[in-house]
Figure 1: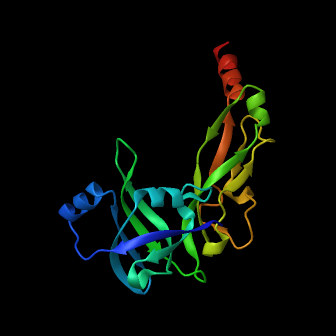
Figure 2: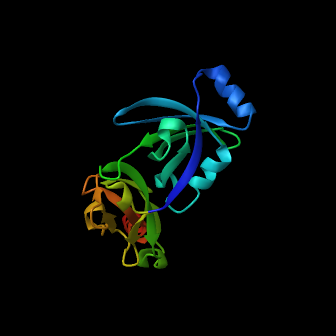
Amino acid sequence: MEQTQLTVELRTATGKGICRRLRSQGRIPGVVYGKGIESVPVSLSPKELTAAITGESGRNTLITLQGGGSLNGVTVIVADIVRNPLKGTPRHVDLHKISLTDKVRVEVPINLIGPAIGVKEGGLLDVLRHTLEIECLPTQIPDHIDVDITGLAIGHSIHVNELVVPDGVKVLADAKASLVTVLGKAREAEGAAAAE
């Protein structure tokens, strides 16, 4: 689990005008919230934020806040980022204060390990889910969950209950939900046989 630091400044004023002014000064508005604290408006550098979440853990990186008075030393994860629709740059960020001893719910990406045997035989890989919601302690959040698809044949699927996840990690999706399947030749052959 990656950990990094991020410098924030407390802000007393809120509203659209203040947010526009912050962005024109090269900073973005944000808010820190969580169990046991009232929401605290902050401002921060978009470059620092991007650098903090660029690693393999992405938005699940544990971030220790620096500066910001009472927030100094607080551990957070990024709960939400509003981005500019054209440039993709951050415009606002929600930071969720967490305790390292309390479980959290986060989305982690699925990492497919393959190629599938069914694809080699002419099938089409159909990925039904790219992320999974999990619950675990913050220090146990995996960067991703590996799914080995090498043995996946045409017409077969891999389901949530077949996953191998690290100790302490609970997948919150339906155990019978399909993650990935291989479609193709089998259906095409059936269609051709029916046509004849």
